[in-house]
Image 1 (cartoon, rainbow, N blue to C red):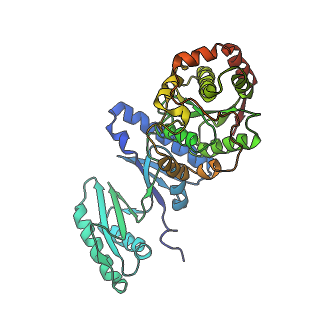
Image 2 (image 1 turned 90 degrees about the vertical axis):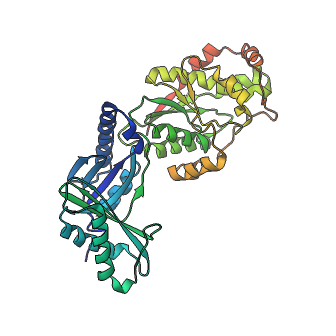
Image 3 (image 1 turned 180 degrees about the vertical axis):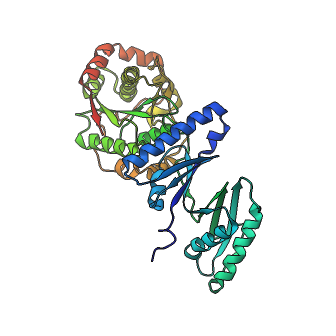
Length: 396
């Protein structure tokens, strides 16, 4: 015998709230991109479905794998929540009948519940009347469960959405990625180290609609293959949130640059000089990719190179594109929480070789004059060209 969950034949897709504050033209463009992203996800995940209907603020998908489909779509940016649901007509008798089927499985013995109906269209009843009628029927039919109504903090909410001639019954609202549909903003080049912070910064840029082009700077021999593998693994996980978009990562040869910095420049400036070189190379990649900015995982005070003074020194190396830092005000606990949600935390905490070029006493309040004087010992243009020539692209 099939359970109510197995009989769910639809998925309710609710748009991200910010989409509604846009102008009509922008909102239509965002919805079009979101629909395309949903279709790409369903196709590439081999999810069988019959139909996608668009209603005000919603998409409704007909599928016999509603639960699995809902979980897959919860990773699509621009969707605020999803619900596996059972579809019926908007006739009150049908709404009550299907509500009882869903309630039988969803409601626990001696638990509390609430019925919450939302309607769009003209019907011979109000939402409050639906709540009252369905709630009364539940109490009568499942008297042995000793259920009680709690409209404030119920154990279970039975949701009913009535849309014109159709109604959808559900008991679970799954939080989705939220944000803006991916592709509604231009691409950004992301400095991806594989540690905890940078993948989260990438994900937050994606959440705002920006497709990412990760760039991993290979510091061999100061790091090793374990560090490279970790970075590539985090990129693969991030691209699970970007189905339908290009999945590639640049592996930039940076070890020789770092070697020259260590040998020719004051050691206390090593990390700042290294990162400034990364910014310059990333700007060239942004040109190639027609991107609109560079994203990093830096946060105020997270490392010696990330004091406010040092961040200003770093910024001055970028002359063409802005440096975006989504984690600027995050503390480590907040970043780790997001990394666990994204799925990168376990990968980022794998044992890998730390960079051995890090000085014992790094500068925390560097002056731009001192940094620029130190860089006079370097052939910056030649170093950039050499790194770009030796860089490689991996399709994931």
